[in-house]
Image (tube, rainbow, N blue to C red; front, top):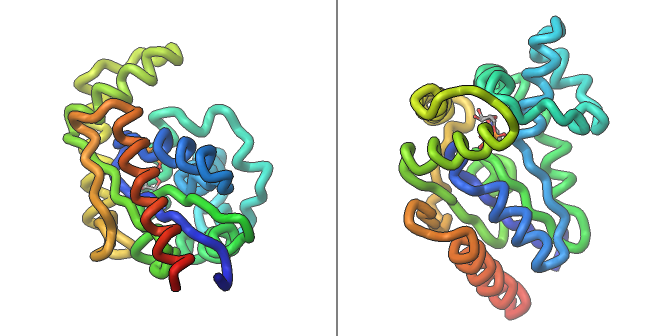
Length: 209
Ligand code: CDP
């Protein structure tokens, strides 16, 4: 196999991509990149006063080691900077290099299977209804002490979905050859099992080439 074995996992906000991606990476010993953190880090720098394109062009790995990147405010800021073509272009090489690393890689985001790694050996699109996703994100945020109501979280999720799906650059959509995993009625274990099975099938297919 030339290059690495890449698993691309895309989907809308709070669909369970992060949990599934981490579990798949741990199961197969692959490296994992949560590409949403790149956009969140650019959003954080923008809110701190740096122009968005410059922030993306000067992003360094340490910028991702910031515990506050997962706040609702930075989710919205991330989706605003993510519509800018030059921001996305500045983050491309880092993501592609990560995907090509020896030993396998899982990247999760919005455009991994469509734009960043169109040749990924496995492509998954993890989704769930907006209400289920908002309920999960609400529970996660409440656990961290945030006071947003369920209705506010649902509104934020819907606003971000709309911005991500309607943008011109790398809109959120499943790749033609992605397997769809709808986690609305699945437990975490069931969602992870479905993803692991898809990766096993991809590994089989690539060793048979
Ligand atoms: O964790 P959650 O699904 O809520 O969000 P995230 O994956 O951290 O992504 C935050 C925002 O970054 C998204 O709403 C997108 O606008 C943007 N993003 C993107 O455009 N492309 C990616 N590959 C990953 C994130």
